[in-house]
Length: 245
Image 1 (spheres, rainbow, N blue to C red):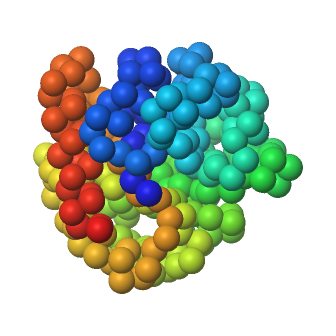
Image 2: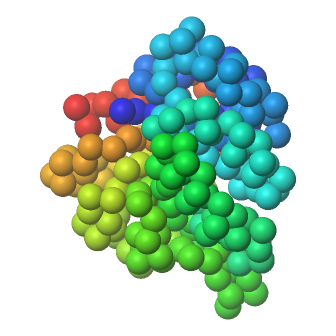
C-alpha cells in the first residue's frame, strides 16, 4: 500500500493532511506523532480514517524532542491493533528513548497486537568521529520483528539499497521512498540522484509485500504553497504507482 507520512506537513492540521493524501492519490497514511495534539487523539484519527477512507497503517515519532512524546505515542498507538510502530534509531545520547525502545516498545507491541518496526537513520557523526545514532546497523535493526528502510538515509552509508533489501529479506515491512536532490535529503521520490524506480524494481523482484511510504521534507514539498504541494504529491504518487504496479 502506498502511504503518505504526516511528517511531510508538520504545520498543517491532520484533517488537511488526510485531504491532501486523498486528493494526491495515496492509499493510506503514516501518522508522525509530534507537537500537534491531533496526532495524539486516537478517536479523532479513527474518525478521519472513516471520513477519508484512508487507513492509518503506521505510527512514527518526531525526530525533535522525541522523548517528550513517548507517553502520547504509547497511549495513541494501542488503539490501532495491527499497525506498525515505525521507530527510528536513537541518538547516541538519547538515553530515555534508547531505554524505551529496548524495554517498553516490545512490550507495547506484544500487549496490543502491534508490529515493532525498526527504521534506519542516516550515518552522521559528532565531531566527525562519533556516530550520532546508535543501534543503527542492519544486523542491529534486524533484531526487531520487522525492519523499515529509509532509502535516502541508506545513501549515507556504504550499503546499496538493493543489498539492504536482500539482507533484510522477509523482515522488510516498510520502505521510505526518499530521495536526495542537490545533496538535500528527503526530496520527492521522482526528483533526485537516487534511482527510486530501480529500488521499486528490486522490491518487485523480491516479491515485497509491505508498504511504501512517501516522506518529503516540508521545505522540499513547498509547505505553505498548497497548489505546489498538491502538484508535487500527485507527481510522487503517480511515479510510485507507475514503477510499482
